[in-house]
Length: 117
Image 1 (cartoon, rainbow, N blue to C red):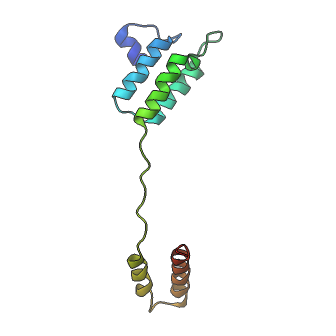
Image 2 (image 1 turned 60 degrees about the horizontal axis):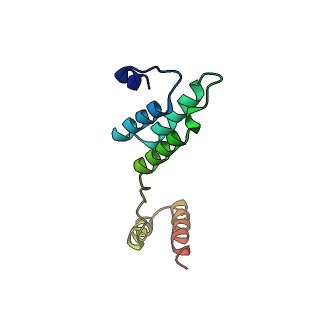
Image 3 (image 1 turned 90 degrees about the horizontal axis):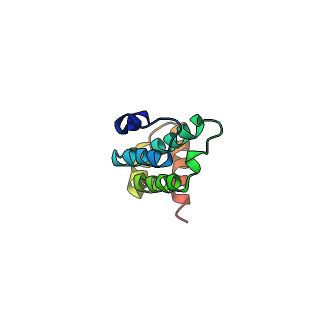
């Protein structure tokens, strides 16, 4: 925030909604994460001066923050599921193991093949 204010020769406190929105836009352009946007919102709401309106409740700031969250959101990375061949290799690998290995293999196989019903 102070970096943005130094470049534009603005006061840091009290924070103007338009200035803070420009700082959020700069974070968007730098491809920061959603947590960085949320952190900036929490910092500004925590540091506010007593008696000043809360900047994060300004409709313009909330719209920019919501847009930032939508722009910077990443889809979840799904893990690949196990194939039946992989499970069969695990089972065949533990054929000659101890009783504990056989029990773990049985639990593993029941867990995998139980979901196919």
